[in-house]
Amino acid sequence: MSNELPIRKDLAGRTAYGAPQLNLPVQLNTNENPFPLSDLFMQDLSSAISGIATNLNRYPDRDAISLRAELASYISSSASTAIDPGQVWAANGSNEILQQICQLFGGPDRLAVGFVPSYSVHELIAQTTCTDWKSIPRNESFEIDSSSLSKLEKNSDIVFICTPNNPTGTKTSLQLIKEVHDHIQGIVVVDEAYAEFSEDVSAITLLEQLPRLLVVRTMSKAFALAGVRIGYLVASKDVIDSISLVRLPYHLSALTQAAGLVALKHQSQLAEQVKAIIVQRERIEKGLIHLGLKVAPSSANFVLFGEFADNHEVWRKLADRGVLIRDVGIEKWLRVTAGTEAETTKFLAELSKIVPTSPKET
Ligand SMILES: Cc1ncc(COP(=O)(O)O)c(C=O)c1O
Image 1: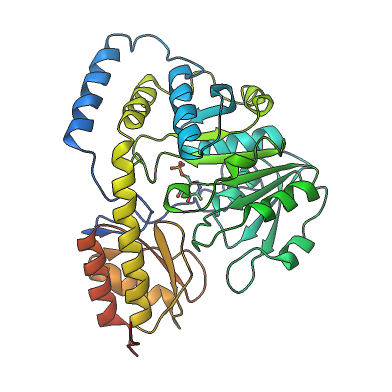
Image 2: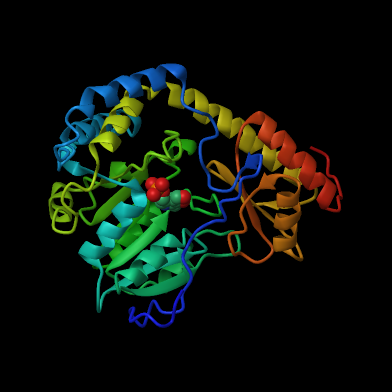
């Protein structure tokens, strides 16, 4: 970035966040759903878009009422707890939701905390909203335990808990989320971007008991809608009403809202795809262990594995062989997304040519 422009001092000299977008045959680097949308979905999407096209000279529904109502009904049935549309908010990806949360609850003289390694955008958004940041390390198994909790200050304004955690795949119990909520004066943001891949009960079920709990979800992963950009927040009505203080007017386009509604209509396909992705995640775990590698137990659609003397070198060699995975910046470890069966086969085959093996019985 230019050092000559009069940009904010705290941003000067920094580099932008983002995984390399390389056009390689096997893309297992950003935890997307590998399945393209079905023909029926595309037909419905085309007719929904034609239906609204004549009205695109007008601003969209500012409060995305229909989308939020359908999201509320999806959440109520999938999390088995009654959620009112007034408890749901939607935006352009959960990243925008996270930003709105930091705009509302963070800012100068406010403290946000995360348990690292975790989704680094939490820290990035805290910084760009001028919120102080504190990282508390997870234990050796990448979990949050009582020693991590003892480092949590009562006056924390925002605490992020990502579960299943990106990039480790490990999970955090509802009991621990409750302890964090009761320990601090601020809000607890549970990032459940990968909830559909986990068998665990969602933190959404705690909302009635915990007034300062906010649960963030996305349609980018299980819903296979990363290109559309829809994330959502489930929280108390008071929180949702307050978000309108920071949202930009008409932030969610009519096209985005229409696509989200079509995806929710096709949600029955989800279960099948999620099952198939979990099968590949399990195959990857077994295959990696067979190669003598360590694997962090994953409840998401990706696997963190290691340990390599030079993880970046392994990443590069795989990329040279057409397989794109992610170096998430954890020394010795790499992360791979569970893709299609063919993609898993290619990943394991290419990795086995790179990694010196000490095969174990499976
Ligand atoms: C934990 C977590 N939260 C949020 C996001 C952002 O997702 P999106 O903005 O596509 O909804 C991601 C994306 O990878 C993620 O891993």
